[in-house]
Length: 268
Image (cartoon, rainbow, N blue to C red; front, side, top):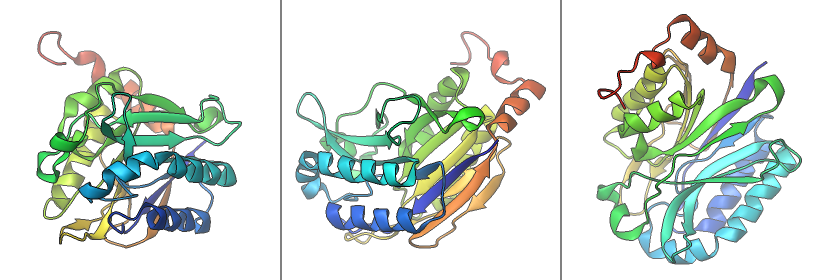
């Protein structure tokens, strides 16, 4: 059985949560059925720093809209946007909502970005996460043990290796990765998949930001051998869909067991 993944590679209007949520909802609603829809990092605001405090206070409204969408599509929906932390700070938080009635019963799983990106001013404004997060997505034999990550996390292979060692067979990564490092993004995504013999779904923002930054898209599905099996390239406001067989990752690990060969004291 296969798990159908849908990557929503979208443009973002900086600092306009309602407009961006509406755009995301329209794209998901018009797309073919899928098990998981993935939205980009910070898809509600982009890096419009001066809007983050208000957006974090309004995060519940965004969550309600996404939950309605998950229920309507009977699918998991994930993406990151700023949210308030328990200590009054703000986190770049990936939210993964399941349709009501799905198993496991938890409707919401969250991951706070651990590796904050200095060039975009994250360390000065955001609280870093300290916990890796994994969850099940999909149903029955097609369900996958999925690990959540955000953008700059891709430069830290230990993060993904530990998730893989704990059983993850699918990495869900949302990004707002800018030019001119688009090729690096793809290189790192392929490396994280191949070295861990896991599927990787990467959803990146596309288009121009208000400050002149541009984002290359390049959203893709990477197989456990590092092969890109689906590629959105630089298309704007497109939903890329691919079916993945989680058992491919399990068979790859059984045929060529890399993870058990880690050396204590040398490898993490």
